[in-house]
Length: 412
Image (tube, rainbow, N blue to C red):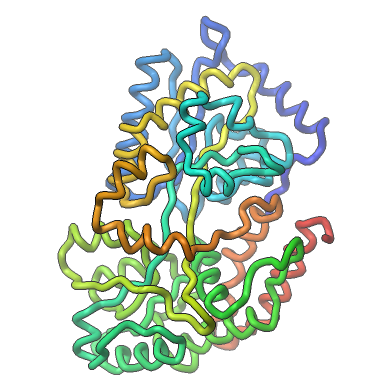
């Protein structure tokens, strides 16, 4: 578990350590450390290396760039924080625990007014802690339900499922095709178990919290996790060992190989499928057990850690990224959705993004504004998959997660 710096004296010690760092001739740092999550091997590294080179030419400040895969970035960042060696700029899908501990600059301290005013307000709200923006939106996405049209036709399924009962029936028909065909690819491994879980939880009327109180082990959530365990162990319509299967290199890859009938996806997966041209796929809303279908909206962040003398260098780097030509080029290349007004104007004409833009009004976000979320997310990533193993006990897993979440919240 991440052990965060929670006392002012420790924070002061961190700043004292940073005061000894190497500095440039102008009094600013000679280099800044930037840690970016790897969204794709084709685009993430090349874009950020190019941006780093451009920034260094303009500012004479070197960029120590680390591109880290999603499977290990949470643990690596946790280690950096524990060792009092945070980056200057970090890209992650949570931020509020760092804001709570006073480790981050407020956005107004490291962004020009022009950059700050360009954010879509819905995404800016998602990056706030106690009314102040700390988690600066970097990109967004909305999940959708993908299905293999060719496999559906072979199984005699005319349309994507709208209910959970239809979903189970379709998954069984797909699995019955044999030849290694999998009904549904269920990724509850450590990469992003919290995302897959959120979609199923919300579409059964459950949630992470009720007001200020964590409700991870509610009866509805136990029912949902039992349903997912049954997919793996009673209906046998998932891949082998879904509790250890990751999203990108597991579930998505199986779907791209034409071996899976259904999977939860998003626009970057569609872009990859279009480029490869091997799978004829459709995109639909989520199967739901209650009311209107709900999808997961995802917002990732950039955040700037306070270090003595680094503010102007960080501000220059962030403003360079948020120049409309730069941010839009990268988001488009990765296949994500915009977080700025200028980006929305440029990308709204792309018809292939319509299903995801249309899904945003019914999208929900995980509770990233709660400082306990970092610990809860990591716990879910490491633990939830145990419930879908043979002999797994969904209620015991959720009880443990609930207990740890309440403790992380300080007993609230």
